[in-house]
Length: 216
Ligand SMILES: Nc1ncnc2c1ncn2[C@@H]1O[C@H](COP(=O)(O)OP(=O)(O)OP(=O)(O)O)[C@@H](O)[C@H]1O
Ligand SMILES: O=C(O)c1ccc[n+]([C@@H]2O[C@H](COP(=O)([O-])O)[C@@H](O)[C@H]2O)c1
Image (tube, rainbow, N blue to C red; front, side):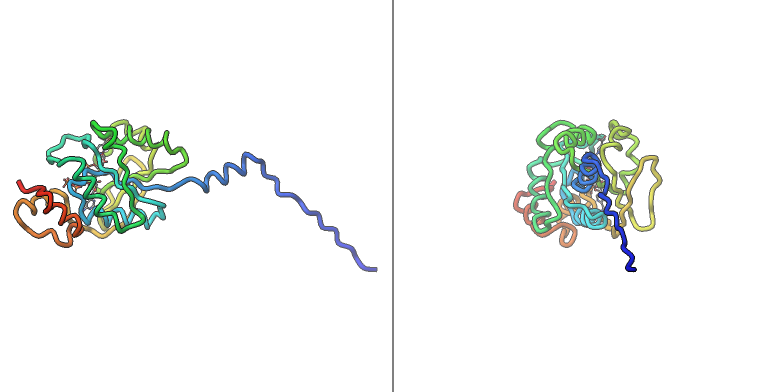
């Protein structure tokens, strides 16, 4: 006699809430923010942002020029308008990059905690990754509301090869080539009539010349 097999089809048991939670996690945007004075932006910044964005698989990396950096400032920053224009020229050819103007619009001193609180209110569906150079990691304990801030962002430290500074705060480390360029050096070069070629994008070199920036 032929045996009959009984197969019980069971429905997957998943509540509406669980389904929403799972889908919600996948829907969350993963966005990089790269805060800086960008006075001016240089190729070191661009290489860092590209490394962080691609290594972590971020959807977008937004360059976020500060209006006024929070720590005591010895670098005489030029107007926000020029700094923003140069960032826009530098990032124009890379679809991964964008500009976040929230700190310029807010004015005053650009405390990252204030910015992140505001961005979280505006975009509750987004996870933010805040990109900083390895040299900034040592200063994190001095940042305003740092214990609350680490709950709002994941800090991404771009490390100089072989060197990972210790920190009491959680840092996601990304490796990038060591590029010894600083905005200070770029400004000094302009003042002394030295070449900026390969240190700063050509479009930004043209802008600096056309607008007569950093001549003294
Ligand atoms: N060449 C570089 N390599 C790694 N990190 C960098 C480099 N240049 C800048 N950074 C990081 O970029 C961020 C923004 O820096 P910022 O706009 O102040 O530029 P900067 O070159 O450090 O300027 P300045 O020389 O005027 O202090 C900071 O987190 C800083 O640590
Ligand atoms: O919020 C703070 O206390 C704080 C202290 C130091 C630096 N930051 C932020 O770190 C970023 C890099 O700073 P800077 O001065 O190197 O251009 C920039 O977005 C600053 O607003 C923020």
